[in-house]
Image (cartoon, rainbow, N blue to C red; front, side):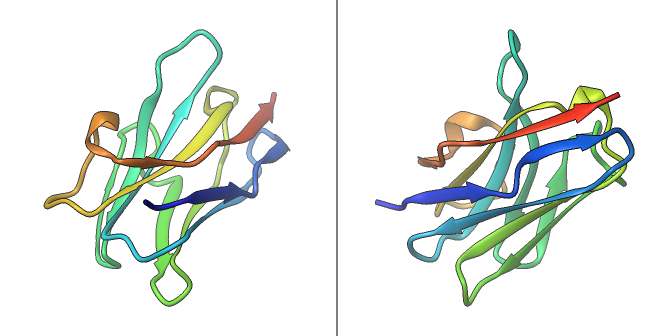
Length: 120
């Protein structure tokens, strides 16, 4: 079992930045980020495998950046140039299977989420 704890969410103006963190209770191979806006389904944001391979949703490419500190079992999501449509609860997910995952059902472990609100 892996516990995930997200932090770093908050209220920010459009164009601003936030840095989300996800601390895992033990090492995992894949870590992903998803978000869910009110009334909408959870959607893929980005994923990082080991400390090398990354994949991003088209809507965040060029604005969001994934990174990891393997020693600290922590993944980071840097959110820049935020837009109102980036508002939602951001969830960290993890698993140890093969491949880099973009679908929520492919992740075995989930955090509780952290709220990001972007005001226009």
